[in-house]
Amino acid sequence: MTLQQLLYAVTVADHESMNRAAQALFLSQSSLSASIQNLEQEIGLSIFRRTNRGVTITPEGEEFLVYAR
Image 1 (cartoon, helix red, strand yellow):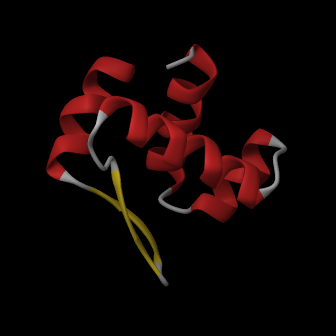
Image 2: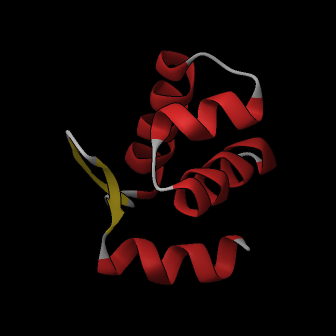
């Protein structure tokens, strides 16, 4: 887990969209998504629930994001 991945997770949570967060971070959406997936695999839980309308934060993700912030 890197500080950069924590920043990415917080930004996605703030924007509630991978696409908008990627634009804010000046990254491609696929690169951001891959980084978030790597973080989720490393910590062993899902931070976000992905839908066609954006992302929502899981209950475990809420707790994780408190520490990430």
